[in-house]
Amino acid sequence: MLAPAEDLSPLADQSVAAVTTRSVIIYVKPKQRAFQEFLRVLRPGDRLSMFEPINRFNEARAANISHEGFEMSPVIDNYRKLREFYTALQPPDTDPMLDFDEGDLIDVANSAGFRSVELDYHAEIAPPKESRSCEHALRSAGNPRIPTLEEAMHRLLTPDEIERYTDYMRPLYESDAGRSRNAYAFLWATK
Image (cartoon, rainbow, N blue to C red; front, side, top):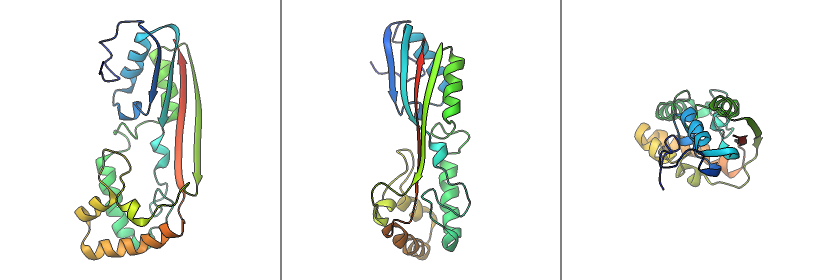
């Protein structure tokens, strides 16, 4: 069976013993509807178990600090162009990947009607767990819905700006100067 999380109509009411998801709600705009569907298909006393990344935590907190913890003042004009480009693609208040945090998950599960809701939250700011080259960073996308940094740079920056930006970033990656920001939540709820 293939169905979106917010419309499990192929499943009858109270027809499943458990609902488990991993990084699903992050792609769903009508989150409340998905939780209502999870509740509808569960039998009384059975459970929802889910894991969700909390991408809102990953956003840079200062205008001159990248989400990787790099000081961007020397290339701030180029950095702002790129940051604004990505923000326009995924507005934090309306994009399903960014429009919630751990508190929202608890609230949505509770308001859907689950009898009990538990959540474990983990957040960390730490050196990257593995070294990344500048080339790897350029060819990576933060998620499947957005272009790579290299693609964005070619859309927005001149060849000279690209060279200046990558010349600045390369030693930062090679020195492991950055900090990764990661957060996720495990939620359990009982019908």
